[in-house]
Amino acid sequence: MMYVLPGTNIEVREMSYKSCEELLNSIFLTGGLVLSQVSGMTDCEPHVVQNWVKRGFLTPPKNKKYSKRQFCRIAFINFLKDVMRIDRVTALMEYINGALDDESDDLVDDFTLYCCFASVAGRLEDFRPESVRRAVDEVCSQWPDEFVRGRLSDTLSIMATAYGAARLKSRCDIMIGQLNL
Image (cartoon, rainbow, N blue to C red; front, side):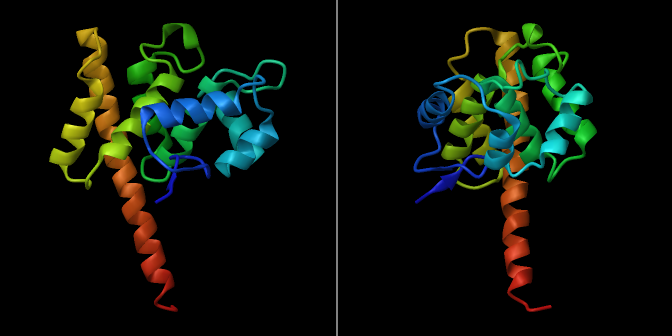
């Protein structure tokens, strides 16, 4: 079975922290990605990504290259915007990372958060609240700082619920498409 990393079109065999980390590390082995590469991997139009930078949703690229952390933020916004209003998406990102245009105040950097989220998504049996809670608790249980663990748990729970909503929305779209309306 193949999975698609949320907010991207990148297929993976396994949805786990380790597989996500290894894949993203290999993609960024030579440094950052240019806008066309980010756009190609996320199906986000370049002007949309540039608008997110302009609006302060992520730090500007350095030398026209996006880092792993920036790419993960783009993937988060991209998948969450389909089921949440953009102001709620940014509020959620600020809850775990403070000012969105300043990476120095992040409680959990976006790369780590994205890999944690992949681990939660890979553990989900279904999208019921009990399943989400169990998967989030497994991922967060070893986090050393209690305050950060609480924020991480809250954030991952919302993201996992949004992930479920996105998957169900996609299934509905397929079903409606089969009706030949």
